[in-house]
Length: 299
Image (cartoon, rainbow, N blue to C red; front, side, top):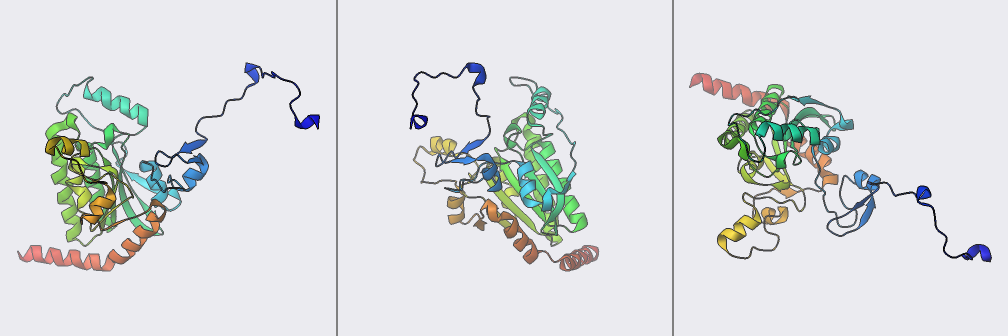
């Protein structure tokens, strides 16, 4: 049975013959520490099969989840930020934008597109946290506003997937103006009877929460997402008290009436399809639009 035992001691494999394990083969859940094959993790829509932890994903992954066969047409793909305030912190704002674009291969912190979800038309605006913390600058507001206009023009339902740290300080007042702009556009969408579904993901904070993220016909969220205006640390330091367990989690916000429901990412596409089928009747939307126009003319 010598073949079953190591009879020679001190066997050493030369360095040039050693094979390193390639990076990216495994995913370790930050919540339960379970290790999963990255291929299986992707098939599970970037959720942990053991504890159901939802990993942060970006627009590319959400478009893949939502759109049929990942087919869509992007809107205003090349719209990029200018520097209206000549802002400089550790580096000039244009250089920060350029460096972030090169690093992330994104143009700004939101992508907008239209396609089909289970054969139903849909316009989607999805934020990318990798781009300066998903901050809401003038381009973010403008692209969302244009996407809403596209939805109004074609009578398509509109889905907003929010993921943001808040307003973009490099644009100051220009950034804050996007709250009013997007909210006004959503009011026009509502007047025409076109559904708006808001999906809040981790994290959704600041001016985004205070405007378009909370204005949906349905406000829904992913499990465990951080949702609030100011962050928990800022609030704790301000009031000088311990915060409740789970404060500003999606579950906490749902319990206090600010969400309609929480949806698992693996069920997201079907849930959205159900909501759109229930809310969106193109003929009714056209009738509502005609009625609104008649009222306007009479006034």
